[in-house]
Length: 237
Ligand SMILES: [Zn+2]
Image (tube, rainbow, N blue to C red; front, top):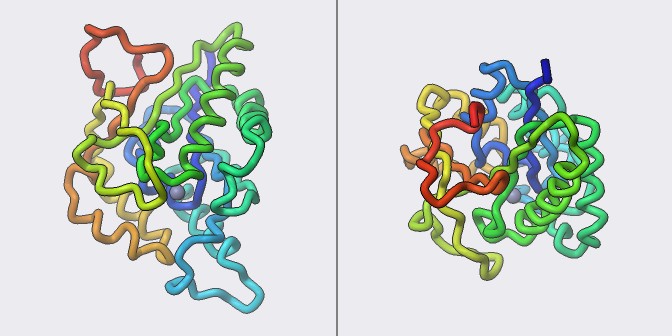
């Protein structure tokens, strides 16, 4: 039987904790193996709350926070790349896509999750890794003879987009899958708490019950039919 493998592709340490945490952990509880890519070590993040040891960089510190979070999520394989935080959109798109494709070829995921073209926050790194993942996914899918892989964007309701401080971005895609992850609220809080240095970013969100208890996805491939009802899981489609 084919091993059930999921790959989530992000730009920074903490993207995985802001993202579909409940779904990631639900996958593990349903017998999936999960892998995470973080294309940077978050070295341009908030540093005031990072208590660095002598010789330790913010990137070192945030990589440790990411490892803590992935432990909470039960991630089997973590790839932390050393692209500079804030540089992804300046890299040759082909380079980033080839790196993602190499992981896909090795890991052989059935499900791939990344940002949509909106990047959720409009961050250029999020948008760049989304594009690279989509390019890589198309090639990976065309190479497949046994797996029929599926690609999802993590998405949010349009009325939750507050602002795009990094610039303009398209609106988020409408959810094609709405997942009740209320059973994983504690896991979500624990994953976020791993990112203590970035607490100022996520602490206000803890009051948002919708954000804590519901994960939303947009299925990119296979495309959703116009009359297809909203799904409640990404694992049985
Ligand atoms: Zn990010």
